[in-house]
Length: 254
Image (cartoon, rainbow, N blue to C red; front, side, top):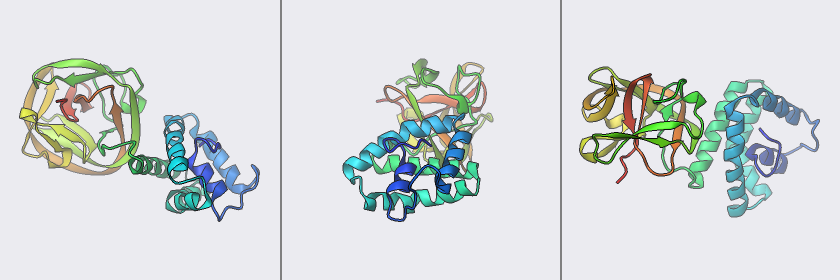
């Protein structure tokens, strides 16, 4: 968390809501958040939070006003619960609550329209590690419009969020864990969300062989962190729970 009114939902909500008793940087709540910030500063969560929250704070001030009433709303809805976790030094729990807050605010202001995403422990082609370590300019393997060929594309950004998860299982055992509302391209270019794909043909690849297989199971997996990969244009890209065994997700570009 960055203690800056220009890029931090939490800081604004702590300082400018009507219940605030924070007057300086030695206040116990402020000290607790500074300790939390130091703990989180070495992770992608911290840097990604600041990047995403700055856009949200700007829109909050533009559309709702930089007022006590505005920050009361966000304090009561999100920040009070995060504050309690930070003070109790339950930092992992606080981080999850922050991610939920940012994701919901992005939906509120139309910054994100898709509820999909790939589980962070999954893989994409060309990457040596899982999606916890995704970076801008990483390469993607995408399905072309003819539904029979592949080409490369580039990651231009990514958004992490907490979503309900399912695991897709193809007839040859290829698996992908993703958000339940992730769009999946079907044969003939149709699209369904992941949770409804059982019994439908989905695009898969292993041993460098692209083909269409029946999705024989969709297994609910609780909730978890996903990555919504951003590109310069709409693409249908490969990912999987195991390296070199892929299922394509997102809509095929029209």
